[in-house]
Length: 264
Ligand SMILES: C[S@@+](CC[C@H](N)C(=O)[O-])C[C@H]1O[C@@H](n2cnc3c(N)ncnc32)[C@H](O)[C@@H]1O
Image 1 (tube, helix red, strand yellow):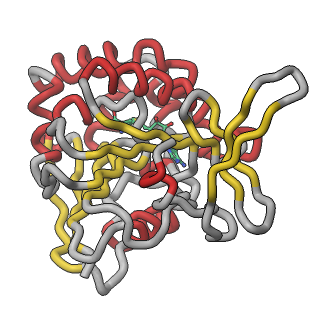
Image 2: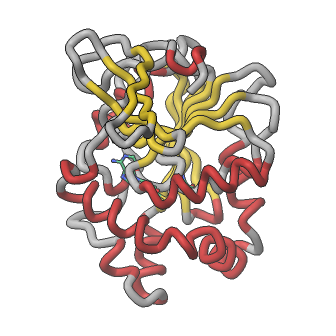
C-alpha cells in the first residue's frame, strides 16, 4: 500500500492513525498490516486492507453481503442485460447520474460500496480512485476490472457506516446502489460527509419504489431482494440541515433517484 494512501487512513473504531508494519510468519510468509497506537491490527490481504470482520456483519448488511458475494460472477453481465432491456444500455444510465460529480484530473475519488466497480469504467482515467465494500468477491472482481480499465484504484474491506478514512480526505465522494438496505443509512451519510473535503458535491443513487415494484413482479427472486416494510423514499431527510444545494433528481426514467448535496 502506498504511503500517500496510508496517510488518509484511520481506525474505523477508535479514529487513531495507522502505520504499516510487516511481520514474518513461522512458515516464512510475510504479512503486512496496519496498526494503531492501541495495538489494533488490520491485515492487508492481496492488496485489500481488511477493516471489518465479515463475521460481525448483522441484519440487512449481512443479507446483502451474502447476496452480492453469491452473485458476483454475473453481476456485471446481469447488470448490462437488465439495463439494456429497461433503458437501452448501461452506459447512458450510469452517465446520467455520474455527470453530477465534479471530477478533476488530480481528484481523489471515493466510491462507497464500489462492488465490481461498474461505475468506474465510465469515469476519467487520470484521478486516483478509492473504493470500499463488504462483499469481498465483488471487490476481487473490481480489482481485475480496474486493471482492465487502466485505473489507479485502492480497495478496502469496510462498512459504509464506519469508514476507515480521516476527516476531509476526498475531493469526490459518491454512492450507488446499496443504501436503501443499509442497517444504518444516517451513519453512512454522516460518514460520507465526514471524509469529504469542504466544498465537495456528493451524490447518493439507488432504486426508486417504481423499480422495486416492477422488478419484484417480473424478476424471479427480486421480491426477496426488495423486501421492505415501507415504500422506498430518497433519504433526503437524513442529510444534515447545514448541507448546501440539497436536491433529488429522478434518473433512468424514474427507476433511480439521485440525491445530491454539497458540504459547506
Ligand atoms: C447494487 S451493488 C452496487 C455496486 C456498484 N456501486 C454499482 O453501482 O454497480 C450494492 C453494493 O453495496 C454493497 N453494500 C451493501 N451494504 C454495504 C455496507 N453496509 N457497506 C458497504 N457496502 C455495502 C454490496 O456488497 C454491493 O456490492
